[in-house]
Length: 368
Image (tube, rainbow, N blue to C red; front, side, top):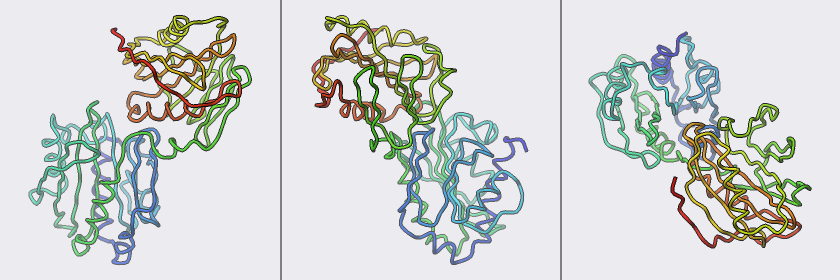
C-alpha cells in the first residue's frame, strides 16, 4: 500500500481499536511511565507505562514510533486490516510529511497543519489549544470521532530544521478522563538530546598505537580499520568508509588516529586538527579551543558540513613523539547534546597511562 494513503488508515485503525478498548486495558495504561524508549536515530527518548511495548515501525516507516499495551496492535499499523483492541500512541518525527500524510494535511504553519489533520480525523468537533512539546511551540488538537464514540488527540509541532513532530492517540469516550493524564505524561516525557543510554559510559576501549583508553556506552561496536580505531553506536561496514565524503552515521561515531609529532607545538596541533576537519566536503569551521587533556596539551576544533549533514568535533593532543587525534561526529539532525557527550568521553580518556580529565583554557571563534 502506498504510504501517502497509509497514514490515514493508521489513524482510522487507531480510532477503531480505541472504540473496542476494554475497561481493563485502559486502567492498565494508567501506571507510571517507568519505562523509557531511546529512539537512537532520532536522538529522542520517550517514557511509557509498564507492560507496554515500544518499537519503531520499520515495516511501515522508520519515522513512526509505536507505543502499545498489546504488541499485536503495532503489527496492524499501515496494513488496513483488523487491529486488536489495545491503547496505542504513535509518535511521528519526519522530514517527509507529504509522503506520510499527503499534501491535504501538511500546511505552511503548525496551526494550518493541525487544522488540516483535525478535518480528516475528527471534523468539526475539534478544539485547538497552544501547547509546548520538547520546548517547541505546538498545537494540541482534541476531538471526537462520533461514529466510533472515540476521543482523539494530537500534538503537532515543527522543529527548527523543518522536521515535523506529531503525537497521536485515541481512547473510548467513557475512558477519556482517565487516559488523558497518561497521554499528557507521554508527551511531556519526550526529550531530545543524547539519550541516557549514551551518556552512561560503562565500558572502555584500549588502543595500543595511541597508548589510549577511551570510555564508551555499552553495546557499541569497537574495531580497528586501517590505521584508525573506530567506535560506533551501530556497527557499520568499515570497508565502505571514505574519509572526507562519508555521509553521517546512524548515531555518534568516533575515529582515533595517530600522526607524527615529535616536538610538536600548539601551531602543529592546530594544523593537524584543522587538516582533519577540512578534509570533509563543505565543512565550515566554527571554533577552536586550547585545552589540556589527560595532562597533555591539546587543541580542539569544531565545525559542520551542510553538504554531508554532519557536525564534527576534533581534538589533537601531543603524546610523546606523536599526535593523537580523537574525532567525534554525528548527523546534524542528532547534534543536540552531542558536545556534552563528546566532553564526557574525553573526560574519561587516558593517554600513556595518564588520566586527569579535560580542562578548556582558551576558546577562539573561527571566521569561515
